[in-house]
Amino acid sequence: MTVMQKVIWSLLLWPCLQTVSIPLDCREDQGSLLRCPSISQEKLLDRVIQHAELIYRVSEESCSMFEEMFIPFELQLQRNQAGYACITKALPIPSSRSEIQLISDKWLLHSVLMLVQSWIEPLVYLQTSLNLYDVAPDTLLNKTKWVSEKLISLEQGVVVLIKKMLDEGLLTTNNSEQGLFQYDAQPEMLESVMRDYTLLSCFKKDAHKMETFLKLLKCRQTDKYNCA
Image (cartoon, rainbow, N blue to C red; front, side):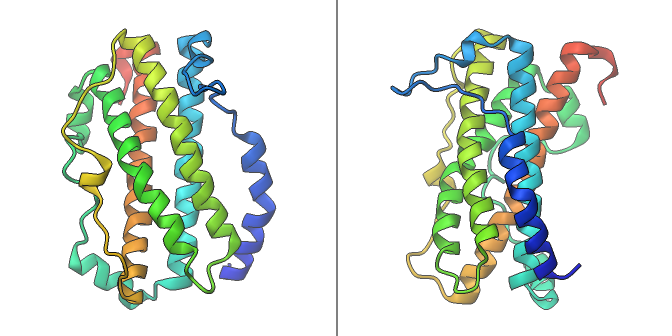
Protein backbone atom coordinates (compact mmCIF):
# COMPACT_ATOMS: atom_id res chain seq x y z
CA MET A 1 0.00 0.00 0.00
CA THR A 2 1.43 3.37 -1.00
CA VAL A 3 1.73 6.35 1.36
CA MET A 4 -1.09 8.14 -0.47
CA GLN A 5 -3.35 5.11 -0.13
CA LYS A 6 -2.59 4.97 3.60
CA VAL A 7 -3.38 8.66 3.98
CA ILE A 8 -6.73 8.18 2.20
CA TRP A 9 -7.48 5.08 4.29
CA SER A 10 -6.65 6.94 7.49
CA LEU A 11 -8.95 9.80 6.50
CA LEU A 12 -11.78 7.31 6.03
CA LEU A 13 -11.13 5.69 9.42
CA TRP A 14 -10.52 8.90 11.38
CA PRO A 15 -14.20 9.62 12.21
CA CYS A 16 -14.51 6.06 13.54
CA LEU A 17 -11.77 6.65 16.10
CA GLN A 18 -13.52 9.74 17.36
CA THR A 19 -16.86 7.96 17.77
CA VAL A 20 -15.47 4.71 19.19
CA SER A 21 -13.51 6.49 21.92
CA ILE A 22 -15.55 6.78 25.12
CA PRO A 23 -14.57 9.90 27.07
CA LEU A 24 -13.35 9.44 30.61
CA ASP A 25 -15.30 12.58 31.63
CA CYS A 26 -13.13 13.20 34.65
CA ARG A 27 -13.37 16.98 34.69
CA GLU A 28 -16.19 19.38 35.36
CA ASP A 29 -16.08 22.92 33.92
CA GLN A 30 -14.06 24.14 36.89
CA GLY A 31 -11.48 21.41 36.32
CA SER A 32 -12.17 19.35 39.45
CA LEU A 33 -12.14 15.56 39.28
CA LEU A 34 -15.81 14.89 39.98
CA ARG A 35 -17.29 12.65 37.32
CA CYS A 36 -14.90 9.69 37.36
CA PRO A 37 -15.42 8.95 41.09
CA SER A 38 -19.07 8.19 40.29
CA ILE A 39 -17.98 5.37 37.93
CA SER A 40 -17.31 1.95 39.42
CA GLN A 41 -13.67 0.92 39.69
CA GLU A 42 -14.17 -1.90 37.19
CA LYS A 43 -15.77 0.33 34.56
CA LEU A 44 -13.20 3.06 35.07
CA LEU A 45 -10.36 0.58 34.57
CA ASP A 46 -12.06 -0.66 31.37
CA ARG A 47 -12.34 2.90 30.04
CA VAL A 48 -8.75 3.67 30.93
CA ILE A 49 -7.62 0.52 29.10
CA GLN A 50 -9.69 1.48 26.06
CA HIS A 51 -8.05 4.91 26.00
CA ALA A 52 -4.60 3.32 26.25
CA GLU A 53 -5.41 0.89 23.42
CA LEU A 54 -6.56 3.66 21.11
CA ILE A 55 -3.59 5.87 21.98
CA TYR A 56 -1.18 3.05 21.14
CA ARG A 57 -2.99 2.23 17.89
CA VAL A 58 -2.98 5.82 16.67
CA SER A 59 0.65 6.34 17.76
CA GLU A 60 1.63 3.27 15.74
CA GLU A 61 -0.18 4.61 12.67
CA SER A 62 1.42 8.05 13.12
CA CYS A 63 4.90 6.62 13.44
CA SER A 64 4.49 4.45 10.33
CA MET A 65 3.11 7.36 8.33
CA PHE A 66 5.95 9.67 9.40
CA GLU A 67 8.55 7.00 8.67
CA GLU A 68 7.28 6.35 5.14
CA MET A 69 6.97 10.04 4.29
CA PHE A 70 10.13 11.50 5.84
CA ILE A 71 12.60 8.75 6.83
CA PRO A 72 14.41 6.91 4.02
CA PHE A 73 15.84 3.51 4.85
CA GLU A 74 19.37 4.91 5.23
CA LEU A 75 18.22 7.27 7.98
CA GLN A 76 16.39 4.44 9.72
CA LEU A 77 19.67 2.54 9.85
CA GLN A 78 21.49 5.66 11.03
CA ARG A 79 19.02 6.13 13.88
CA ASN A 80 19.33 2.48 14.94
CA GLN A 81 23.12 2.59 14.85
CA ALA A 82 23.29 5.90 16.71
CA GLY A 83 21.21 4.44 19.52
CA TYR A 84 19.00 7.45 20.20
CA ALA A 85 17.84 7.31 23.82
CA CYS A 86 14.18 7.75 24.70
CA ILE A 87 13.34 10.58 27.06
CA THR A 88 11.77 8.21 29.60
CA LYS A 89 14.86 5.99 29.84
CA ALA A 90 15.79 7.53 33.21
CA LEU A 91 12.41 6.75 34.79
CA PRO A 92 12.23 3.81 37.24
CA ILE A 93 9.93 1.86 34.93
CA PRO A 94 10.23 -1.96 34.80
CA SER A 95 11.26 -3.20 31.36
CA SER A 96 11.82 -6.94 31.44
CA ARG A 97 8.99 -9.46 31.64
CA SER A 98 10.22 -10.78 35.00
CA GLU A 99 10.39 -7.28 36.50
CA ILE A 100 6.88 -6.45 35.34
CA GLN A 101 5.49 -9.64 36.85
CA LEU A 102 7.07 -8.88 40.22
CA ILE A 103 5.95 -5.29 40.75
CA SER A 104 2.87 -4.48 42.78
CA ASP A 105 -0.43 -3.09 41.53
CA LYS A 106 0.61 0.22 43.08
CA TRP A 107 3.75 0.42 40.96
CA LEU A 108 1.92 -0.67 37.82
CA LEU A 109 -0.44 2.29 38.21
CA HIS A 110 2.26 4.75 39.17
CA SER A 111 4.45 3.55 36.28
CA VAL A 112 1.61 4.29 33.86
CA LEU A 113 1.10 7.71 35.44
CA MET A 114 4.81 8.55 35.20
CA LEU A 115 4.88 7.58 31.54
CA VAL A 116 1.74 9.57 30.74
CA GLN A 117 2.91 12.72 32.52
CA SER A 118 6.38 12.49 30.98
CA TRP A 119 4.93 12.62 27.46
CA ILE A 120 2.48 15.52 27.79
CA GLU A 121 5.00 18.28 27.07
CA PRO A 122 6.98 16.42 24.35
CA LEU A 123 3.77 15.77 22.41
CA VAL A 124 2.90 19.47 22.53
CA TYR A 125 6.38 20.20 21.15
CA LEU A 126 5.89 17.54 18.47
CA GLN A 127 2.68 19.17 17.26
CA THR A 128 4.45 22.53 17.01
CA SER A 129 7.34 20.97 15.12
CA LEU A 130 5.13 19.07 12.65
CA ASN A 131 3.20 22.25 11.86
CA LEU A 132 6.44 23.66 10.41
CA TYR A 133 6.71 20.87 7.83
CA ASP A 134 5.70 21.97 4.34
CA VAL A 135 4.30 18.59 3.31
CA ALA A 136 3.02 17.07 6.56
CA PRO A 137 -0.50 15.77 5.80
CA ASP A 138 -3.43 16.92 7.90
CA THR A 139 -4.03 13.30 8.87
CA LEU A 140 -0.69 13.12 10.65
CA LEU A 141 -1.23 16.49 12.36
CA ASN A 142 -4.72 15.47 13.47
CA LYS A 143 -3.50 12.16 14.82
CA THR A 144 -0.76 13.73 16.96
CA LYS A 145 -3.22 16.34 18.25
CA TRP A 146 -5.76 13.63 19.07
CA VAL A 147 -3.16 11.56 20.93
CA SER A 148 -2.03 14.60 22.90
CA GLU A 149 -5.60 15.37 24.00
CA LYS A 150 -6.39 11.74 24.85
CA LEU A 151 -3.18 11.48 26.87
CA ILE A 152 -4.49 14.21 29.19
CA SER A 153 -7.78 12.30 29.53
CA LEU A 154 -5.80 9.16 30.31
CA GLU A 155 -3.85 11.01 32.99
CA GLN A 156 -7.10 12.13 34.63
CA GLY A 157 -8.49 8.59 34.59
CA VAL A 158 -5.32 7.06 36.06
CA VAL A 159 -5.24 9.67 38.83
CA VAL A 160 -8.79 8.77 39.89
CA LEU A 161 -8.03 5.05 39.50
CA ILE A 162 -5.11 5.41 41.92
CA LYS A 163 -7.39 7.07 44.45
CA LYS A 164 -10.07 4.39 44.00
CA MET A 165 -7.83 1.30 44.00
CA LEU A 166 -5.10 2.40 46.40
CA ASP A 167 -6.96 4.95 48.50
CA GLU A 168 -4.01 7.31 48.33
CA GLY A 169 -2.73 10.42 46.62
CA LEU A 170 -0.11 10.65 43.92
CA LEU A 171 3.36 9.24 44.29
CA THR A 172 5.85 12.10 44.24
CA THR A 173 8.93 11.67 42.07
CA ASN A 174 11.98 13.75 41.32
CA ASN A 175 11.32 13.54 37.59
CA SER A 176 9.48 16.29 35.77
CA GLU A 177 8.55 16.61 32.13
CA GLN A 178 10.74 19.70 31.75
CA GLY A 179 13.72 17.90 33.25
CA LEU A 180 13.29 14.90 30.96
CA PHE A 181 12.74 16.74 27.70
CA GLN A 182 15.25 19.25 26.36
CA TYR A 183 15.12 20.89 22.95
CA ASP A 184 16.93 23.53 20.92
CA ALA A 185 15.11 26.65 19.79
CA GLN A 186 16.02 26.28 16.10
CA PRO A 187 17.44 22.86 15.18
CA GLU A 188 18.64 22.00 11.68
CA MET A 189 15.96 20.46 9.46
CA LEU A 190 17.49 16.97 9.36
CA GLU A 191 18.10 17.05 13.09
CA SER A 192 14.50 18.18 13.65
CA VAL A 193 13.12 15.36 11.48
CA MET A 194 15.22 12.74 13.26
CA ARG A 195 14.24 14.06 16.67
CA ASP A 196 10.55 14.04 15.75
CA TYR A 197 10.96 10.49 14.44
CA THR A 198 12.66 9.48 17.70
CA LEU A 199 9.85 11.06 19.72
CA LEU A 200 7.20 9.21 17.71
CA SER A 201 9.08 5.90 17.94
CA CYS A 202 9.71 6.22 21.67
CA PHE A 203 6.17 7.31 22.41
CA LYS A 204 4.84 4.31 20.49
CA LYS A 205 6.93 2.01 22.70
CA ASP A 206 5.83 3.74 25.89
CA ALA A 207 2.18 3.75 24.79
CA HIS A 208 2.47 -0.01 24.38
CA LYS A 209 3.89 -0.24 27.91
CA MET A 210 0.97 1.77 29.29
CA GLU A 211 -1.49 -0.57 27.60
CA THR A 212 0.40 -3.68 28.77
CA PHE A 213 0.61 -2.51 32.40
CA LEU A 214 -3.09 -1.62 32.54
CA LYS A 215 -4.14 -4.95 31.00
CA LEU A 216 -1.94 -6.81 33.49
CA LEU A 217 -3.62 -4.86 36.28
CA LYS A 218 -7.04 -5.83 34.91
CA CYS A 219 -5.97 -9.47 34.74
CA ARG A 220 -4.83 -9.37 38.35
CA GLN A 221 -8.26 -8.13 39.39
CA THR A 222 -10.00 -11.10 37.76
CA ASP A 223 -7.51 -13.99 37.64
CA LYS A 224 -4.59 -13.17 39.90
CA TYR A 225 -2.69 -16.45 39.52
CA ASN A 226 -2.85 -16.81 35.74
CA CYS A 227 -1.59 -13.46 34.47
CA ALA A 228 1.36 -13.69 32.09
